[in-house]
Amino acid sequence: MEHVHRTPLGIGDRLPQLEVHTTHGKIVLPTDYEGRWFMLFSHPGDFTPVCTTEFVSFAKNQAAFQQLNCELIGLSIDTVFAHMKWIEWIQSHLGVSITFPIIADELGVVARRLGMIPQEGATRTVRSVFIVDPSGSIRLILTYPSEVGRNTNELLRVLKGLQTADTYRIATPANWPNNELIGDRVILPPANTVMKARERLEQAAANQFECLDWWFCYQEIPNK
Ligand code: BEZ
Image 1 (spheres, rainbow, N blue to C red):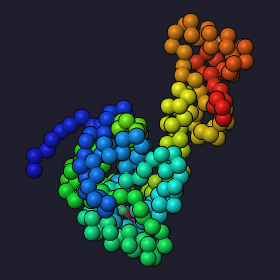
Image 2: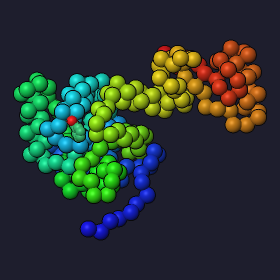
Image 3: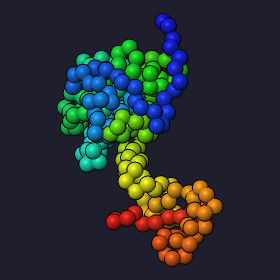
Image 4: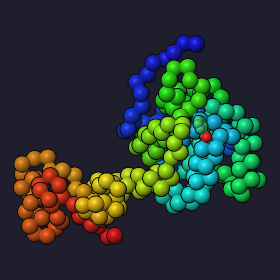
């Protein structure tokens, strides 16, 4: 098979146009999701235990994602029929409905394009996550190994962080909203001129926000 070497996708790139076959029929990404966020995640395979725990957790948290205007889309190198039988099993044995679409990427075309298969010749996807914003731009790429299940709370946290950053033009600290230094407060973009640095310290002195120094200023989220 001919191998096409492309530059790997990165944060800020537009997700390439992908026509995919899913348990809900044909979907065109990112076009069909314009105006909504979506989280596209791969798993190594249907009928595997760690993936089952992840699917149950994603399903139980789907409403929380949707409250943030974010839809879920799964993917593995399996057939639509395998996906259907697996989600039937999850429903009948665990009582959990999987209602998000799952891409059947039987030939691994989508997975290879998105870098979800780690080595040349490997036949399974690892646990990749792409968060894509309402304009189709990739905002997060995560790659987890097969042997460690993902943390749904962290995926919700980073989605909220991205949306908060977009809304207020700020950045969120480590472990936000439970940061060890500044709690749930958020960080102003660093001053990038001498004048702005001076202004920051003047604004901090006037109690507009707080600063540890001119390059480290933070504030409550406005209108919280
Ligand atoms: C699992 O989902 O249980 C799994 C899949 C691939 C490798 C290891 C574990």
